[in-house]
Amino acid sequence: MYRVLGRLVTLVEWWAVFLLAALAVLVCLGVFFRYVLNSSLVWYDEFASYMLVWLTFYGAVVADYHHRHINFDLLVNKLAPATRRAVDVVGELAVLGFQFVLCWYGWVLTRTMFDETAISLPWVKVGWINSVLPITGGLLLLISGTRLIGMLSGRTNKQGGHGAWSGSSSE
Image 1 (cartoon, helix red, strand yellow):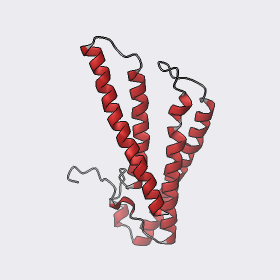
Image 2 (cartoon, rainbow, N blue to C red; image 1 turned 120 degrees about the vertical axis):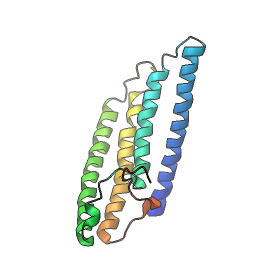
Image 3 (cartoon, one colour; image 1 turned 45 degrees about the horizontal axis):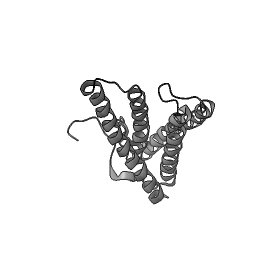
């Protein structure tokens, strides 16, 4: 299961890389049109905003899989192993609850707003834009569910091989 999940996250990571590159090209194109050709693209700002949102959510999936989200583990690391495991399980359950809300209400929002169109891009459906919410919510649920099963079964999950980012600039 971990291998399939790892491959899926690798695909999401490449998608995020593509979004980042496309966003950089789009912003450069917008600047070029505005300042060199003196003719603004009316749609690029809105589209770049949507791409940034997508990049953020898909990047969160990759960061979660690799344990790269910020956490406060100073106190948790000082706990006894059994207590630390219990705290980790409770924390993962809380995260799982949030991810369920993201997935469920993202689906509701996507379904409700599906036929609406973007302001400057009338051929783009808002449902396509909002689809990032249930998709990433579902992927995050899958990652956390797998991690929680590993915690409860006593297997340590070394997904990604990285520890959480502590915020230190020396890492």
